Length: 227
Image 1 (cartoon, rainbow, N blue to C red):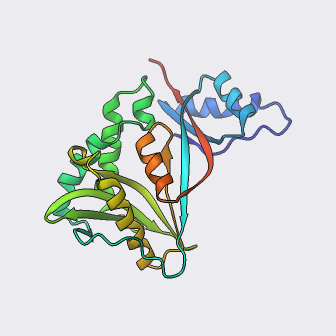
Image 2 (image 1 turned 60 degrees about the horizontal axis):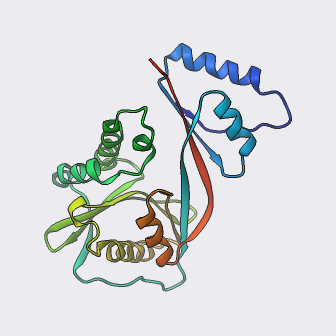
């Protein structure tokens, strides 16, 4: 379950929140996730008083694409839409690439939940009506995948991306990200936007080197039902 918005506006929140907790318990929900702006300290302390725990800080990098911008061309890398034949290899990458995300940081949860979540996301994106699963290859070798969405306001949102685990740290990050910036510009996007957890320092630094600006971060909290 996701708690999409909470705001303490000078009123006692106890009654409203007890109503939420009652519905949560009636449904037998085992996990509730909530994201708050980093400035919502009163709300964060209130959630902690109701057994929510801080899990991560999430950054939101954004890059404006100027007119005529094409990014750096890397002739050895190609981008294509994924096919059904690509999905087994892409789900294998997704099951091993994400080690800093909230379902792994919350030690009350089985870490396999994290891996299965991203694997399911990759598999379902192949037929998603708006999200697009892209494959980046070096020659015939799959080196990375991106799940992207071109929004009506001209934003190309990078929902999920990863480099094959055995190729990380070998210089592919900058090359792949440049290639995907070029791809977004060619498709008419005005900006690229993504999200990244603060603990993924290598990728945070990559976005900074590529000229992304970081919007105000948000905090993630989890409530987990204890058996």
